[in-house]
Length: 534
Ligand code: GLC
Image 1 (cartoon, protein in one colour):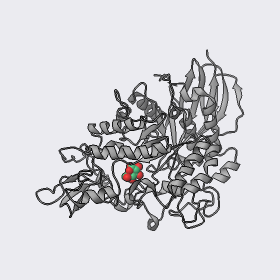
Image 2: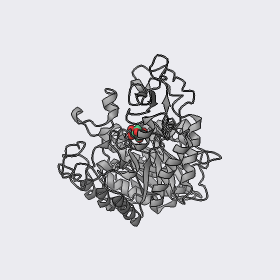
Image 3: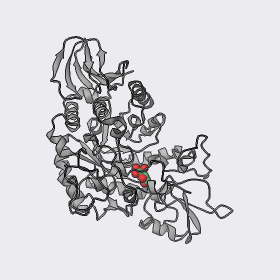
Image 4: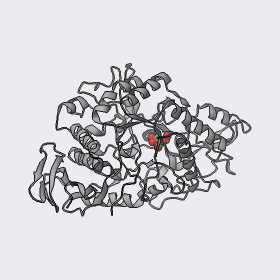
């Protein structure tokens, strides 16, 4: 199988996209929380690294119960981050360096202190009465049905003023908006236009697969294999998640994006690879880039990775542009699972696969999960559904810019603890080390920029064997062969043709012609070989 390049290319098809949780990136005022002024001071680093676009987790006004995914005002910057003027400065500074800015769009729910909810919950006759999901009690006075909140317990909360329940997919303090209501849709469109007019380059749509819930409010069935799963995952969410009507909402959101040239829509979608193709749309376009976490979910061996990559390419429509994500604010750090040596292999895989790479701040230094003492836990997921390893704080800990105790992140008390400085990955130390994983990420990103074939060339799988995952990226016969040793021991890799070794994940082999068509890969080594047309 090979995937051909479409004729025209958009900026996001060539971009490397870097996710930032601004609260943990750089503090500028000593309050222990990152802010926009801090972020501005780190743009030079992003540029040095070779990032083309940043996606910021929410920076809007919020009580911050859920990392800002509980929004009180969609068109205001939270004072902890700065002001709208700071935002405009940030955008201008990023654009001045050629870096694009993607914001998080959270259309599924607001915070319960949002003015829309105050009005909606005040009475059944209010102007916004139908902007959220309201339902009468069941006959016994209890919740209308068995739907659960992802953060534990019933998804329904009683409201005395209306004598009705409202639905919340997540926290009680995050009521779900009613996407069947055209006025609500129009209001979200206006929110998008507010930021698009200011010049943002696109949005990442949060929880896009759950925007519509079943109109009949039918009960979700129990999962057959529920045992041992966290309580909210013991149902099959057929009537709350991934409803066909949701696609219409995504098409609507896309139509707003398309009012403006060159803007991109990516989005959090349903987990399974076989569903991901839907989110691109057929006759009507949906997301440009549905986020694909398959590499994170894959077992870490050559055959599983080969199968994972193949299954994904098979699941997306022919003209769809692929996406590969290796980290995120909801995802456990992959370096903790596969180890430092294989993290370098993953860097090479990510930067040489066909599709847009997404990484999360800190992935470029191979950052691992940061242990968070129980008394410092902030994530509501862990507080409400404890004991299942669901805590997301270990990935959200503040950046380590250097080896000082505060990591160069803050002069105050950081909102979440960092690792101890000794031996922990940090940017300054790795910048000085020309063989660090940071140096590797940077070199691979530079290669990608330099060679159109690595960005746009066809993907040609080779048969992976002997623990070596291998494929080609080609353009009219010439191009690159990538061979990745997923094992910790040396492996010989044979191929046919002539080539020149360009780079090794170890960063210790100079570019050199390869005398015969085989190479001895050291343990955990990946290489890119430039190959000539036969
Ligand atoms: C999305 C966010 C996640 C958040 C949830 C509820 O899934 O990625 O961080 O907890 O929405 O707001």
